Length: 197
Picture 1 (cartoon, rainbow, N blue to C red):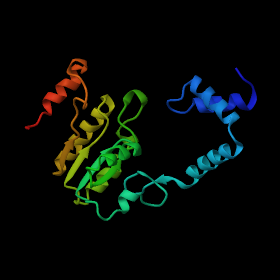
Picture 2 (cartoon, rainbow, N blue to C red; picture 1 turned 90 degrees about the horizontal axis):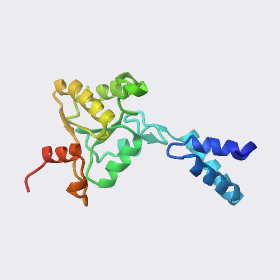
Picture 3 (cartoon, helix red, strand yellow; picture 1 turned 90 degrees about the vertical axis):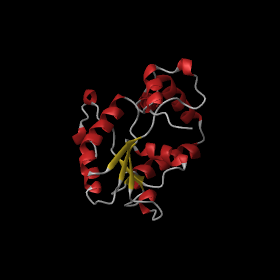
Picture 4 (cartoon, one colour; picture 1 turned 120 degrees about the vertical axis):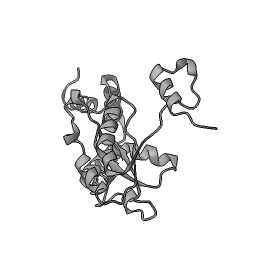
């Protein structure tokens, strides 16, 4: 549609997850009309992220040093390990303020259609961490979708023989939701996960 640098920018922005052609065009024209200092600050920040941010050598969360802030925190227990798919999932769990254990980031979920199998995830590293004998409970906090369920099932089958308690995050009805709008699977899980009041 456009020529030269502006089209190149639209194309690159369109490659970002969740950014469609219209959004890419809007962002590109915002950048074009923005103050040069703002654009330079954005460019500097993007370069800085690529240069400084890496994965934690212990849990594979994002970090600017060898270990992330969670792994450096001596107040956390080593007996409970929460397995998540991506670093952004750690942020979601941390926002609850309920978890004081450690994490392990798999780097995705089993998805045969995308060519992602167990060997493409950080399962070997997880097994090495579990081999120390410190972990008493493993919480599987993968996404409640087909890929996340397949990953959780695979891990549970692999880890239960090790004598470690394996639990899965509960799933069911969202707070503020209406029963009439719940799908059968969600409602079924809510019945399975019911608790005494």
